[in-house]
Amino acid sequence: MSDRVQAVERALLLLEEVAASEVPPSAPEIARRAGVNRGTAWRLLSTLEHFDLVERDELTGRYSVSYGLVRLAAGTGTGSLVRRARPVLERLAADTGGTAFLEIASRGELVVLDEARPALPVQIDLTGLDVPLHCGSAGKLHLASWPPAELARYLAGPLARPTRYTVTDPVRLREQLARARRSGVATNYKEHQEGWCAITAAVRDRADRDLAYVGVTLPTYRWTSAELDALAGPMREAAVEIGSRIRTGGAA
Image 1: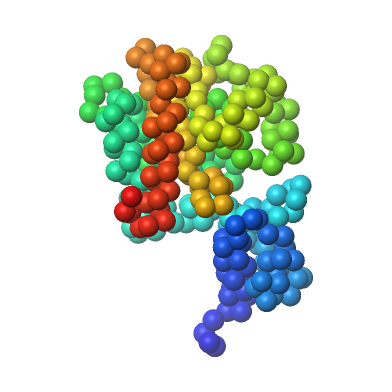
Image 2: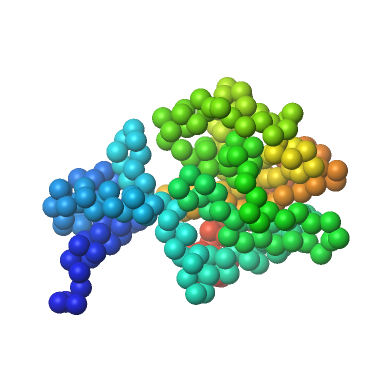
């Protein structure tokens, strides 16, 4: 017992309470459940938020687990998240002939953790690619998960328009994000580069929060917009399978 640091122990207790809650809890609820003084809980939650381990909703003041935890898990020696999702990515790449990818959100940005490419002469490399959130399928899903006030600030612009197909009208974008929020799937057809299109599904936890994103990027010369939309079902199934693999340690 004497070897443990009390502040660290309390912070981890708070983090566990947030993670175990089916409904995002408030700071007083977290403090009470963890048996920690409210003032101490506020300071520890602020520290956890600074390191992207929890996220506080600006409107409700309630807390949820943030993507920093996924980033830490991905940095472990085993790369457990990548390893568990890899079979699904390889199958998607083989079935579609596109580049399948796994992404997480961290501090407002999307980070590609892994990608699987098809055995074809023409391949799409996503490594290090900077795609504005409103131009990409994964980005739209991420935006759809934002609190209303934060989303409003983003949509107020200015918004980049890398191609003539990029949607920058806030009303149209809100409609797209609402559909993505309901369906768990978003698409991008020629919106970032005219030669590419993509479809992404949200990998969600038991509390229906976005944990990661699984997607496929495809060449537009081989895929129409309607054909891309038709992949929504298989992409949702892939997201569910990855979520199951994460929870069960790899077994689908």
